[in-house]
Amino acid sequence: TKQMFDMLKEQARIDALTGLKNRAALDDALSGAISAYQRLGQPMSLLMLDLDHFKRVNDAYGHPLGDVVLARTTRAIQSMLRADDIVGRFGGEEFVVLLPGADLQQAIGAAERCRAAIEAMEIPEVPDLSVTASVGVAGFPEHGDGLDELLRRSDRAMYSAKARGRNRVESAGPTR
Image 1 (tube, rainbow, N blue to C red):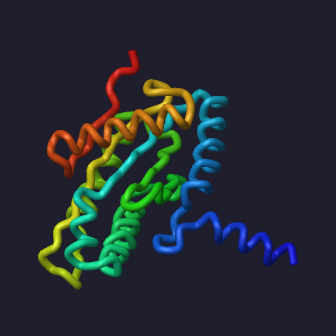
Image 2 (image 1 turned 90 degrees about the vertical axis):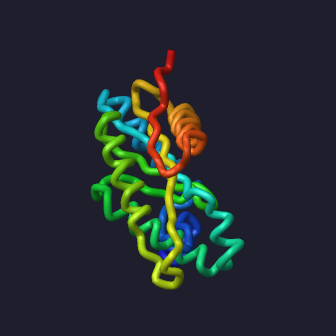
Image 3 (image 1 turned 120 degrees about the vertical axis):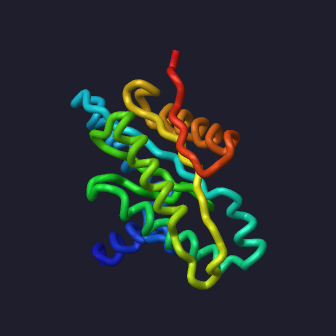
């Protein structure tokens, strides 16, 4: 039936572990949102968030605990965001957040809240495990006017956060 097909199609767009949009669904949602904000001339921002040294978690405690960490990270991020913000799992331990209507300063604040919430997470299965994230922030229109450019700029800023010691937020630099 069409209802069953639609349900399966939607499930294929959801990351099974976190319940977040997967890469394909995220691309569609981001493209739609960016088009709308371009037309309206309103600001929006994109966060690229990557867990620091996540491979060590999987290597030391196994993938099942890694999955627990990813699921808790999802909840930590979501707890710091507004209902209309779009969160997706970009791959492995990488998350992308679209903040519609948020200018760069507001986005940096949201990124810092997400970073702090992840750092504060408790993992009862391994009480001494500390999890941190590096976050890159890019804003529309100052850092780019399309999805690819915003993703590239937020990704570069996230790698800058890693290079500067991890567990921090970095904003994309000026475009020119």
